[in-house]
Amino acid sequence: MKDLIDIPRIFTISEREHRIHNPFTPEKYATLGHVLRMKSGARILDLGSGSGEMLCTWARDHGVTGTGIDMSPLFTSQAITRAEELGVANHVQFIHDDAAGFVSEEKCDIAACVGATWIAGGVHGTIALLQQSLKPEGMILIGEPFWRKVPRTEADAQACGVTSVADFLTLSDLVASFGELGYDVVEMVLADQEGWDRYEAAKWMTMRRWLDENPDDDFACDVRNELTLSPTRHVTWTREYFGWGVFALMSR
Ligand code: SAH
Image (tube, rainbow, N blue to C red):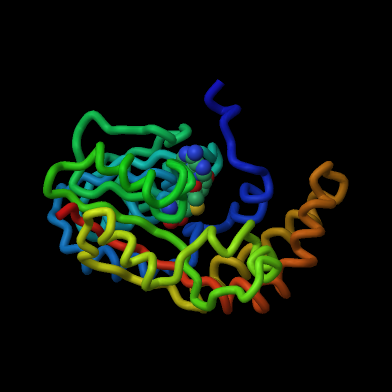
């Protein structure tokens, strides 16, 4: 039954070659791993762990342990393969499941949701969920978009691919909102426009190759449409209007 739980197919097709499913590059994850000053053996929970690059590389580079939960069977199997490749399969585990409402029995040093805060209905709900899996002195990591440039109209927001300007905050409002929730922001690493290019532009060749290999698939029209629109949409809207960052929070 569990295999039936999956994410929308467009992501599985367009991001199947991605190791990182957000605008962070390997260098940004390395910087974040470094600045968090994690101790060897630190325990991390990662909700929406994707293909597992954060946990696997941090297990290799910092000796951390952890569990990742992700709703995509494909990404979860890629994460398990990556852990084996990096020789950390004894330190990290990846579970295919819906992470909504997930609370770990063993409390963690770091509880993360990096680019999947809809799991608990937005940033506030996700912080409340992660807090339940955390040791009292633990740290929460939230990866979230923000408006680098605020769209002037609702139509512009929709061109960015979201339903409303209200879906995201500016960087200053996002950081202030963490304080209002009773958290200190103790670190942050921000993505840049080249990081957005790596996330978005890397989908285009993957989609093109998939289309060449699967011309008669029922889903080919949707993928063709996405590939036709995506490059212009990216350079006109996403790249200019969206920022993205990971914020490390500690309860006051
Ligand atoms: N943190 C990862 C992936 C971010 S992309 C990285 O840095 O690469 C968002 C991820 O959330 C995808 O892997 C998607 O499969 C997963 N996801 C979406 N809804 C989910 C849910 N309800 N429970 C668990 N994972 C979910």
